[in-house]
Image 1 (cartoon, rainbow, N blue to C red):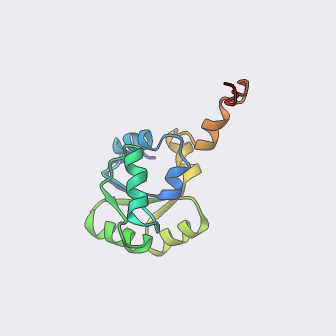
Image 2 (cartoon, helix red, strand yellow):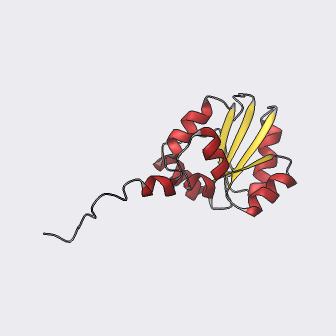
Length: 136
């Protein structure tokens, strides 16, 4: 991710859920970003529950606002050279364009930053024998 630290990084909640270890992703990203947070159309409690469960400390979140209003507000509140939005859909990319944020698909971000996608983490144990949980 260019090693720059003068950056605000926003994750769409669904993109963050695609990563094997969101907590580690945030810890890593804090080393090269100034501000980091999560935006979503979901109710505030959904984002809060996810971030608490994953021990994610964020500098901002969307709250009761939608993603577009949230990204615009973050840009007004946090003054950095770059604003990068990591998303998981074509709609996320269109939103980034509309609010003048750089867009990065979660798969591309994971590859660039050496983050593990949840789908890859699940497939790592494919060689193991299945565990039966119906035994007494």
